[in-house]
Image (cartoon, rainbow, N blue to C red):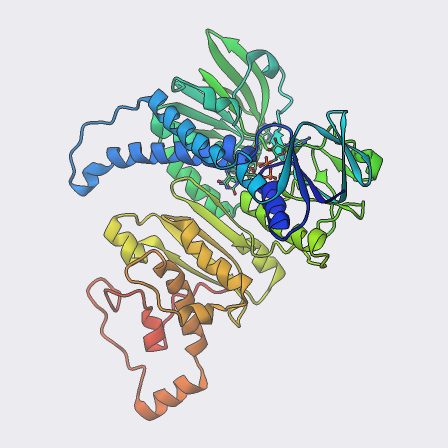
Amino acid sequence: MYDLVVLGGGSGGLGVATAAAQFGAKVALIEKNELGGECTHSACVPSKALIEAARMVHAVRSADRYGIRVAPPEVDFSAVMARVRAVVDEFAGSGNGDSLRANGVDVFRGAPAFEAYDTVLLDGKTRIHGQRFVIATGSRAAVPKIPGLAEVGHLDHVSLWNLTELPKALVVIGAGPSGIEFAQAFARLGSKVTVLADSDQILPREDREVSDRVQARLSADGIEFHTGVEVTKAAKRDGQTVCSWRKRVGGATGEASGSHLLIATGRLANVEGLNLEVVGVHADPEHGIEVDEYLLTRSSRIYAIGDVLQKHDFTHAAEREAAVVFQNAVLRLSKKIDYSALPWATFVDPEVATVGLTEAAALEQHPDVRVFRANYDELDRARIDGRTEGFAKVMATPAGKILGATVVGEQASLILQEFVVAMENGLTLGDLAATIHTYPTYSGMAQKLANQFAATRHEGSLVQTALKWFLGFNKPRAESENGTEHVGSEVEPSVAAGGHSDNHGH
Ligand SMILES: Cc1cc2nc3c(=O)[nH]c(=O)nc-3n(C[C@H](O)[C@H](O)[C@H](O)COP(=O)(O)OP(=O)(O)OC[C@H]3O[C@@H](n4cnc5c(N)ncnc54)[C@H](O)[C@@H]3O)c2cc1C
Ligand SMILES: NC(=O)c1ccc[n+]([C@@H]2O[C@H](COP(=O)([O-])OP(=O)(O)OC[C@H]3O[C@@H](n4cnc5c(N)ncnc54)[C@H](O)[C@@H]3O)[C@@H](O)[C@H]2O)c1
């Protein structure tokens, strides 16, 4: 009888199994395919390795801007993919089961099915008994029902990694993070890319403003977009895959053709074959496994985490859920999952990173919300580097409690992380404003927004009024040539002067 039996050895399953074993629990982990899960083998790791290669090509092509003359780069696609696979192998090697076994986890290979609330049957042969179970079987690509699709064939994020030649022309169906990251990477490597999506904006989870900004940039790079469309048919013509589409509004029609077709239209939970009905666990592939805020299913011994929930498909979400379930299933605490400070990033250029409420949601839910924003061309380090495209905004209560933030631009995910730390630890924008930020770095963006908040706190305050009256502060100051009042620091003039503010508050 194991203390804990984990089904699935990906980001979530490995996390909870290792933590439980390190704590001294007797743990079994059952993996149907390869340890490491999707993130390692077909998702985060290879896609970010490909994106980095594409970023290199782009950097070489843009070197001229910095006074460096180089010949146009030549992409050796098979070498690019060989490196991607080598990176994956390196990661996969470290998850080959040895470290799990070293931590005391018994690793089983095969397909498990529940036989009773305390037993799973492995490959119809071996019974494994447990006190508690965690289902962490992840998800797979959802294939849309498009007439002709099965006949023409398509790539997904798994088969993609077997490509040895760069697609001349790639049609991508889906404009979520997967579709958009791949679209830009392939376009930069030299493919002609067309994106088709039924959502009326790319990156549908983001603010409209964010999606429009990214789409404008990607369009300028040569990617063609058709959003708000239904793909009505896929067919082969002259060796090309041709996708017919029709606009949902207005009914305009068109075709997109390519040497290759990539499907990136969302996910389905891996719940089949687990025999969940026997233990009363509610699940279906589209909606995932139903859990409560303790990540407990309808069975009091069975928890579920990660993509199989179909809630927040991110590795770091699976890891947080693993930590919560470790506390509940192993330590027998009652820890609730809290997603309010869950960040996510889409690794395109300009990078997009978001946490908490979007601006629209914050305005709807908090009528007194204040929105602070700044553009990258106001940030010293961005100006120095010539990477001035993008903006950042943070939504906060009048007291400075952060409700959400979005950053679009260079190092967006790192800038955002400062807001995430603040949100998780109850720090306010005032606390961030009072923190020293290294100069000149992109962290200056967080400082800039926090300083705008601090300036609003000074406005009309008792101290400011007293200083005005007794010391004659806040006299008009001469503006410098370029209209800003200082150079060489991210400190907002408004903080020092106590008067003017860039605040775009509502
Ligand atoms: C192209 C792409 C790029 C991505 N990039 C990022 C990124 O940059 N950052 C990010 O945070 N997230 C990213 N994600 C999402 C991320 O990959 C997933 O959220 C994460 O892998 C989920 O972890 P998991 O443990 O739930 O599932 P997985 O890691 O998929 O693990 C599930 C495991 O269960 C096994 N399994 C399946 N069925 C069974 C069964 N019946 N019995 C036993 N074992 C089973 C599987 O073989 C697998 O090993 C990306 C996804 C895609 C598609
Ligand atoms: N950087 C990251 O963290 C990262 C990167 C990639 C994927 N992911 C995760 O993986 C998950 C899946 O990503 P995804 O991009 O595949 O899915 P998604 O659900 O985020 O986006 C799906 C896209 O496909 C479109 N679509 C769906 N069905 C369609 C159809 N029949 N015809 C035309 N368009 C259709 C949708 O309109 C949308 O644009 C995401 O939820 C994300 O959490 C994360």
